[in-house]
Image (cartoon, rainbow, N blue to C red; front, side, top):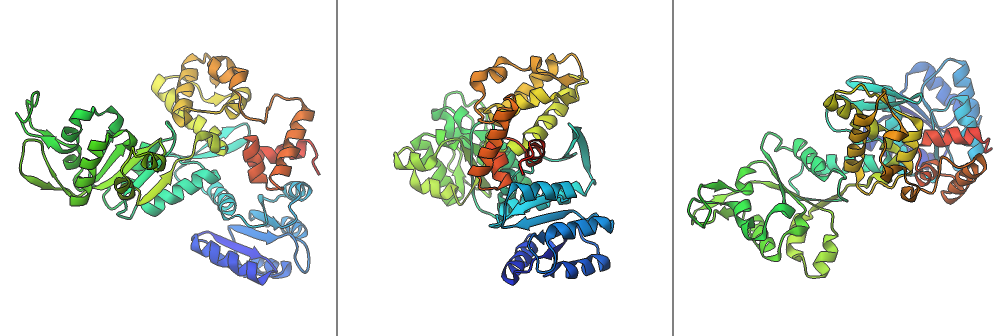
Length: 446
């Protein structure tokens, strides 16, 4: 369990941090002054030090300097209600690991803490070096990302997976809805049972009953053999129905009856079969609007939507774009037997500027294509398709190719809009927090 030292003179906020961090499985030691904290650091080891800027004896920056002088290299996070760029830059120059502004944003705090903890662990991880930065990708399992949107997604999946609730997964095409469904199954008590995935959009209306429930030989023209439907095939496991919004109204009734009664009948049979499944569905449509328009049954919607999981679009996960790119590059290089291991800075710039309407699927396809076309060990801009390089496709307001004065103005404007919140400013710009700090340093925005 990671151990955190809190230094905060506001008793109420200190206690709030204590309970918040304990709820998220951190061991916490409270102090209220810098001198108390220095005593604790001499007696105990900590994974993170979380310090307010304004303290009654000395300020947080001075405390950080003292710790550095004493060779105490515990990652140090500075908190302050005085969220100005000058303080952030100075803290990072002195050696702060990161910076959190008040009012306290729980998702931002968890993001910062998780990044620092993960950076200190190397077990079962492969370190990929990119432009002098490290991106950590698990050697097994699915990579979810470390951005705020990604952490929220993983938290929701971990929360609902052990339950028996039906889950409705929503998100644009290509965001990874089936991967999320499979992860929920793998983390559930049914993980030893089957996981059966069905694309409702690919099922013709007139044979949906057979696909769902099966049929017996001779029950209709073309039924030359007995068939097991997906409900029976998923017994004691999980049934995943993708693109559920494409079901006809008549087939919605069949699905609702099966869910309610937990029994099915094969076409041509009078025998009822008990079913024991967990149902996960997915859609890229707004089912609430479909219900209001009369195209989707409200009672079925509520049956399916006991818990909903929203998969964020790739454009909302820009902090993870580079890591996803290298993950797909590694897979593509193995599959295509190519010795391509790097992505040039200019190519990554184009990735950050693109809107990614096809999300992760589109990114994976472009990476695979670029890997095939690359003659050297690096994906360059000339290996990317026109859809990416065309200026009309660059929808991000932050243009890396702008001259320095325009780039500086863009950063200043984003910080102003975000009211000093670096995470939000970086998201507006479509860059990582670390890149933002580097740019703040570069342009001396103090």
